[in-house]
Amino acid sequence: MRAIVLSGALALVCTLLGTRLAIGWLTRRGFGQPIRDDGPTTHHVKRGTPTLGGVVIVLGSTAAYLMATILTGNLPSASAWLLLLLFAGCGLVGFLDDFIKVYRQHNQGLRSSAKMAGQTVVALGFGILATRFFADDQGVRPASQHISTTQDWGIKLPLVVVLLVIWFIVTATSNGANLTDGADGLLTGTSAMVFGAYTLINIWQNNQQCGSSRPTLVAAQCYQVRDPLDLAVFAAAITGACVGFLWWNAKPARIIMGDVGSLAIGGALAGLAIMSRTELLMAVIAGVFVLETASVLLQVGYFKLTKRVTGVGRRIFRIAPVHHHFEHLGWDEVNVVIRFWVIAGIFVVTGLGIFYTAWLN
Image (cartoon, rainbow, N blue to C red; front, side, top):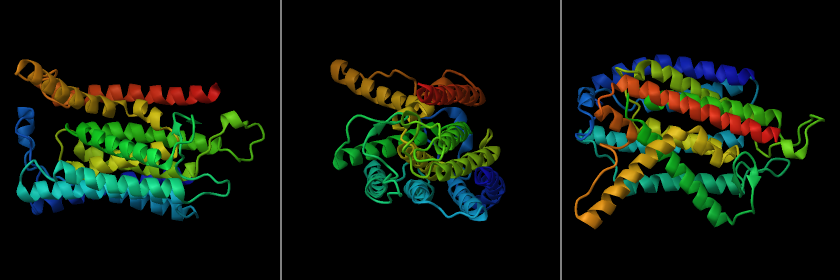
């Protein structure tokens, strides 16, 4: 528990101070954020705001986790290294996307095919390592070959199917986080709540881990998870980093995290869900990401369908993702962000409730 508290505190301090330094450094070098022309007009004033702030989140979280782990007399586990692979790997893809945008001073960075290729390489590399290697003394690997809600269920899936599922989770979650990052503080505040929830989940799984010395623990109440306490330490680091970054990212944002931050956050969330055996539950806990992604899919699908049937493409929302729709309706950006935080909090509490209720039953 000391490592969890220390990790979160160090990450908060690292990003709180590190982001302030990054703002000055990025501003002097002209790393300003291009803004989409079809977005809310109120966002045009953000053009030129320093971007690539997600680098601070990635570096601050990683440094805080490593320091907390070493200072408490431990070493990083295999699960933590795999989580770092997803966190930094997805962040690297986002960094390339951001750098191209800044270099060209255009809102288009990597081609969608190139971005997907990078995410695919990271996801499949993680999937192969997590499902085939690093078994502990009880034979538990970081990722299982089952679908899970709060426990594994159903039949053991073939490796090819499992890798496809892992690829889908990583790409969907990282892109969902990327879509949510469209208003000052929206993704940062939401992520702090989501990773805080996963800190609690991993702490609980560590206390109820199969093979523990608790005499009253029965098989139906234990969790076949590898390194849950170490995952909690890493989740706490990302939580603290998001809170520290939010100080500078809240409206009016002094810095934008960019794709390097949003893709890294989504990748880390996917890794936590996969390794804690809560893939389906994650869709509830990170429900805002699901809503944002669904709004884009519905918008594009409905537009193409109506254009094919009537010759004129129609839209469900004024603009997608859905948080921009409310801004077009006249809501102030701060109101949109706070209300989406409320929705995110409801999803997080609901997910934690499902997790605990499943244990009780």
